[in-house]
Length: 236
Image 1 (spheres, rainbow, N blue to C red):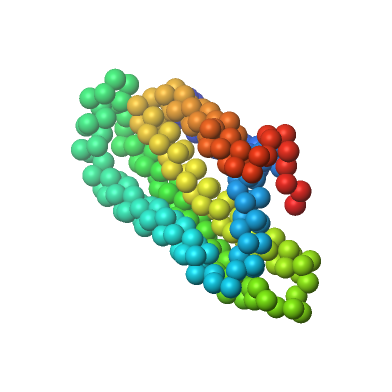
Image 2: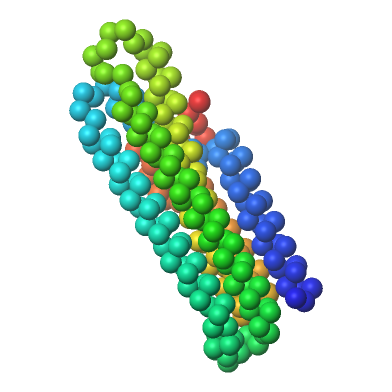
């Protein structure tokens, strides 16, 4: 690897980890997609405790699990394709060599494929952990006190709702980490052409993620649904 390759990969790791830490901390002081959805999750669980029929709530969890299961299965298929690419590197290198600045050795190609393999393994673990956490939330919802239970105080109901919403929130974070891995994996494709393009790609990914998580119209619509302003925040 050249010094430019090493610098681009190091910057890639630092940028990914740095944005993850930045997003989690910023979400604690301002509205983001994750923090606004956590507010709605608590509201959802409070409403769930007031209902006798909770099949719609279980169906919502089931739909979320199906979406994440799709990404987990897709990660396995992508990993199988990447392993196949390692064994057929000569043909892939010939195709890449026909592109401007795409000429590279077999060792360089294999390193790039191995980076993608690590990223999708990370994504798979996050998706499967998210699935497990949603299954834990299903158990908690099944153990929720009945709506007409007289021996349960409002404080106990609220504590149960917040705890269950927190489990769902953690499942959402794991899903977000897995999905974010796909975005950064797309940036690695630029490395097959040139390290400078690689740097430009992962910086663009960070910009896109920031715009979607903190400044998107979707976020504004979510906040507007309850009349919440951006500077307000639900107190955990």
